[in-house]
Image (cartoon, rainbow, N blue to C red; front, top):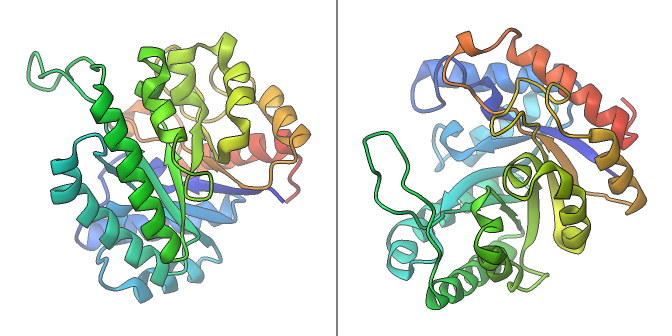
Length: 288
């Protein structure tokens, strides 16, 4: 059975989630409108959780809106052993402990690319090729994380950006080298399409299908994300046909993403979420 959910970061248009009453009210609004838009689950960025040490509060908040807590999302560095041990692993462990106690099904985890130094303030450095030892370390550390999450009763879904498809997909191969029982892909179709191109997106999804356990629905126009699913260039009818033909039974989650400000949008987060939910339900054959 396919279930549809929404990433709550779509509501971060005016302020980002964080500490304080304003953030708490925004998270509450996001969950209320997620349910009203027709979704049954929510994926939350870890920054949306006011206190990871109080998972009961998170469980009660999500339940109050009649939603399933699919998982928390957090990034980490896996190719650098020192950074992984000192920074990423403690944060990922703390987030997972909260998620498990709050009743989440899993954790959505993104891996950091290796980058050149920033050429100017505010501009990211170019993505660099990881060394053989770095990609081996990535496999090793994701395997460890997968075991940790399994012991907590959580699934590990690896969420791709674009760098995994660069440099002959060496990054991606190192992720797929993790045992299938420990890690599956949260395939972000919009992020992938920016690199593999729209013309090869379906071919790529077919190639990876046996490892895909979670679908992130993101549309694109060129290199940017539009407001709602269906506003961009992805063919969601074709994606839906693939998912149905392969009897997909995981979560399909809208990731609409925040812009730089509320002025970047013509519609409210609620309206964009509702439109996107209708696209997902129609193309995946999921009734209300």
